[in-house]
Image 1 (cartoon, helix red, strand yellow):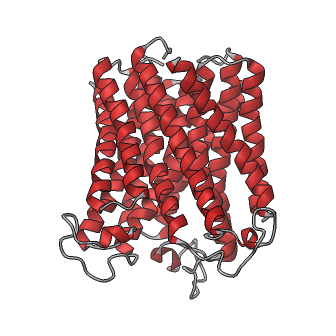
Image 2: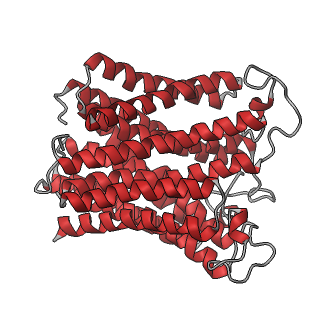
Length: 151
Length: 151
Length: 151
């Protein structure tokens, strides 16, 4: 677990990017709420204030533009934290660097592609394909790590 | 933090199983949506396509069979990531192996029992008991780790 | 990654507190459901039983008092797991102790302040300020770690 270990360094790069992706989705939700001035979750958010200069009725109603970003965030919370830990433990099994790069960067690429497909409402099959590859990478790493330790 | 350390190896086994459990819940949600052909979240999912050969009105309506799996996923996202990190840090305090095994495997068993009680809609008290034991294990490990470091 | 390393020890203290905060929010949701005897999520929770001695219609209806705690939990699940991993990786870059303390304890303080602002329904700007500082700390640590590894 030092940065001189190329497998571990690869993990840290992938993990940092995914953390930034996950945090960024929260800010996209914020930006969308600001842009449309609605889709708020809390009664106090509809009160007049610096962040809400022009209150209007219906600011607490669900808004599809904002809800889509929330669904993407929910998908991130379900998938990225398990990747972060599965990847760390997989890195400790000292896999070949090429395999580690393929899985770690493969995960990053499919999750960014999933983000693109989700935010542009591409057909379900496109989004599902990227989701599935990423999910199978995490499952594959966890199964490999489990077998590595108990064998 | 090597696999030769039996406490750490125990953690890795428990963590890998919980990661697989968490990822599996996502696939159970997918399987349930496929089975009933509904409970979809996104407008584009109700369009005709390979994954949705026979579109019908109401495919975007909440469906209890699918929503139950989503609630289980939500419960996982609230509970499993903190376990993964709390367990890792607790393992670093070098606890006695028997204690570590009891807590790590105890957590796995109560979460799998929670999964069983939740998916079969057992009385609330049954599900709550398994939830509580798992939650208290995480809290106990975090409190122990905190005291270990600051004392 | 030993507790003798003051940067790592600081991380472990902050991480343990945030894990306890996240687990505690789940128990606050439970306590609120018990107090009002409602806001339940599952049909079986509205059946008579030890945890629900006096069933009444509407126990499954959303209740703002309970939903607020659920929104806080959701905010925790979106933000605390990325902090736990970003902080661990940042600690491995061996930053100056003072910087590490400022970021780790700064995160803990802003999240506890966010909890206070959220649970007492303070004006949106107050809650958003604490959220933003915490979020920017995680983003800053992830960006720093990423640059540290790839440079």
